[in-house]
Length: 301
Length: 213
Image (cartoon, rainbow over all chains, first blue to last red; front, side, top):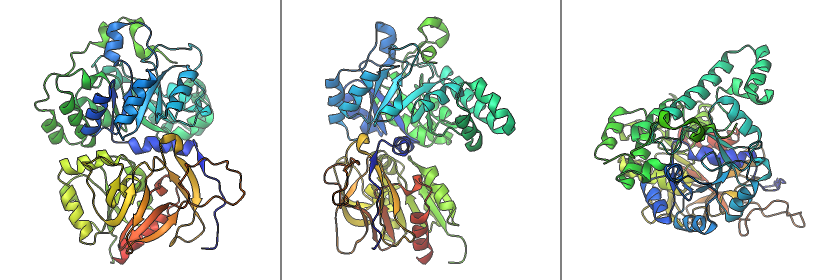
C-alpha cells in the first residue's frame, strides 16, 4: 500500500449522527424507568431503550413538572444493557442535554413529554457530539427541528394515552405533505418553503428525495402489535413504545410481540399470531377526553 | 454465471434499504430476506448494519438461524457490515451470552469496541482489493476484530495517526491499528458502513466474489 490516508478521524458529524438512526430502522425503542425494565426490553429484542423517570402515562396521572432523569438512574440503565440508551431532555433545556451527553447516552430525545424549559427556542443541536431525535406533528415542524440539528424525527402522537389516533394523524400528515412537495413544480417550492416555515434548501431536498433527509420513526399511543404494524405500513421506519409496554399486563411478552410485528408489519398472519395471549393492554385514555391544554403533542412548534 | 445473480439482504432490522441501493448499482437482483424460503436460489447475502442482538433474536425466532448458518458454511458468499460483521464472527466479546453467531469467519470480534455513540467517527482508510484510493469509513458504535485465524485475510485497519499530527480527531485510545475489514474465502466483513457513503466499491468487491463463486 503506497497511499497513506490523510484525513483526520472526526466524531459527531452529521453522517455519524444520522447514520446511527439508520441502524435503528425496522426496530422498536422502548421506554424504561429501571435497569430491570431495560433488561426486559433488551431481552425482547428492542434496538434501544429510552431511559426516563416516569413513563408518559404516569407523568399524565401525577402531574407536576417533568424533567430529565436522575443521572444515577441513567447510569444504572447504561450499565444494565449493551444496546443503545437514549434519554429525554426538556425542550430548550440545553444544559440537561449537556449533562446527558456527559453521561454518555447514545441519543437525546428533546421531548414534549417533559415540561418545556423554553417556550421560544429549541436546543441548538449542532453544538453537540451526541445526536438528537425530536418530535413533529407535521412536515414544517420536522424540517425546523432538522434545521436546528435533529438527526432523527419521530411523529409525536399523544404520549401516555394508548390511543394511536394522533400518531396516525401525524404520520399521515407528514407523508402527505412530502407527497405534495414531490408533485409541485420547482418554481412553487419557494412559496411552499414559506408556508412550511422551513428553509428552502431543505424543502427542495425533501421534494427531490421524497422523504425526510433523516430517519422518521413514530411515537405516542402505540400499545399493540397491530398499532406498531399500522404505523410501519403508514411509512414509519421504526417505532417508539412508551407506556404501552410496562403499563400492560405482560410486558415481556408484549414487548417481544411488538418487535416481531414491526419486522413483519406487512404480514397479517404473523401479526395475528403474535397478538394472541398477550393479556391486558394498557387501559389508556382517549385523546378526545384530554382537555386541550393537557395535550403533549401541542408542546413544541 | 450468466444470468444476473440474486443477492439477498437480511431484512429483519437495520439499514436494509441502503445496502439494497448499493447492490442495485452492481447489476444484481436484490431480495429482502425475512423467511427461510427466501434463502432459496440466493447467490449471496448481505447482513446489514443494525442492532446485532435484535437480529440474532429474530433469526432464532423465525427459524432462519440454522438454515442461514448452513448455507454460509456451504459456501454461500456473505458480506456483513458492523452488526453483520458481529453476526458473521465465530466468537463475539461484549455481546449478550445468548447471542447467536453465523460463524462465517474464523475471528473474534469485540462489540461496541470503539465506545458509545459520542465516540462514533468517520475516517479514510486503505482497503486491500479496492482500487482507486482510500475508502471513507463510517464507524457507528462499531465493533473491531480482536484476532483472526491464519486463514483470514486482513483487508483494512484503522490508520495510525500521522507522526506529529495535531490530534484534532478524537478516536478512542487503542483504536489505531485495529482490524476493521476481513475476508475468509467468499465471506467479507467490515466494521464500518460503506452503504452510508455512496461509495459502491466495497459492494462491487462483494458482488465480484458472488459472480466468481
